Image 1 (cartoon, one colour):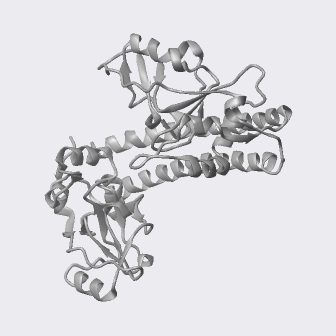
Image 2 (cartoon, rainbow, N blue to C red; image 1 turned 135 degrees about the vertical axis):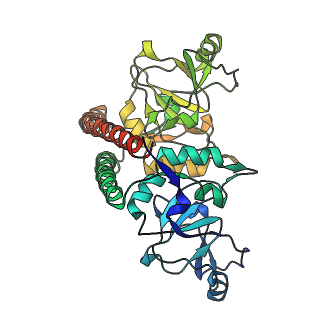
Image 3 (spheres, rainbow, N blue to C red; image 1 turned 30 degrees about the horizontal axis):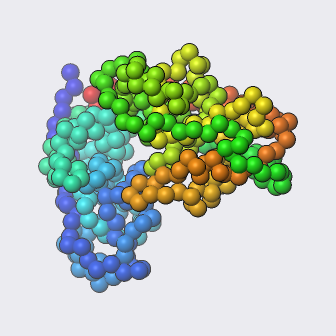
Length: 385
């Protein structure tokens, strides 16, 4: 049976970093917050700056040293970053700093532990909420942590680091294949000087319902919005459920079929996906999503249009047409009026054949990635509970 203790037993020192907000400058010493702690390091994009005088004053009693671990405590919770030598001088607020007792706990073991579902679940149960989620010092100090010897910690760390390295390799392979498709698209179509037509005249361009249905706890019919279209796929894991009556009503306007393109219109604009689900298995309706359908005699094919909408051309076009204040959106009329180049259908089909070959390799990579992530999850469960 696994034995646990409290994390504070492994800490040499810990403290909040939350001084009074100093005066910001256009340049100087970087001043970060919780939002700058991500993916294991400090992201210096979108930081404020303070004077060296203020930096020396506020860091005097609670300095940040190389090897310290910073934890985000407000907003996005529980992200960690290890302070490195090349981070240079910086300070910040809304973070918690811990210093590990290296005689009791291995640094890499701790980082794997802290990124585990075991810790995430504990933090989820501890967090306080006001206008945004936040943690307190005791929420970190009183986290349960399995008791292992230093030798066992290092063995666990090596296993988890190796599998993470393999996961990263697979992710990089998938990203390289995505870049290959984009570069092939540019090579074949960017300088073609093809005739142009409005997308709405080449395809049937619609959008989903504008109504908000009554959601059900469970149903065989799902409701998809812009937030469900991520990572070049439709994510059904967070989809809400609707009645068959609403499903039928919404699909009078916007029935989705195999081969159609779906593209978010609200929030994150773009990121189109081709529907690869057989018609008889499509069990969802859409809202805040553009639906692009292709006619039998259409002069463009879905793979060409999808990659065009993923290109710099579309990104530049939406900067001119996107609307909204707190939440960005692009109007259906603007999508219909997009002027796109129409290459010869033979050239489009040639590109489609290349994409299908690359997609088959991506599919193999995704399958390998899925198995590796399942293995990682099983090991995390075994080691941390």
